[in-house]
Length: 67
Image (cartoon, helix red, strand yellow):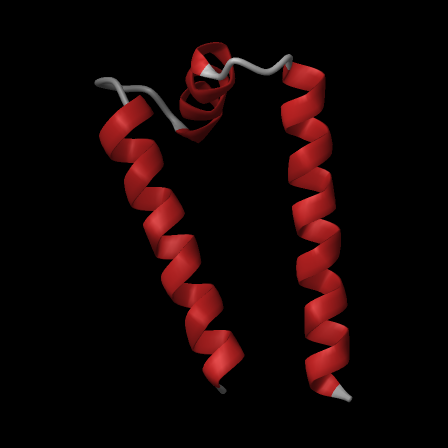
């Protein structure tokens, strides 16, 4: 229950950050992510790799909590 609530709070925070900092008028989620990667000091491939690792860690957490 607590892990689920924490995940919901984190996803809402990420949505608000993308809209507030990298969201221009009429810019959808894809454009927001592209703007975020463009402003990042890291290459796009590294950002994508970190996102994939974060998703894998989240999936692992869900599996472990469900046990």
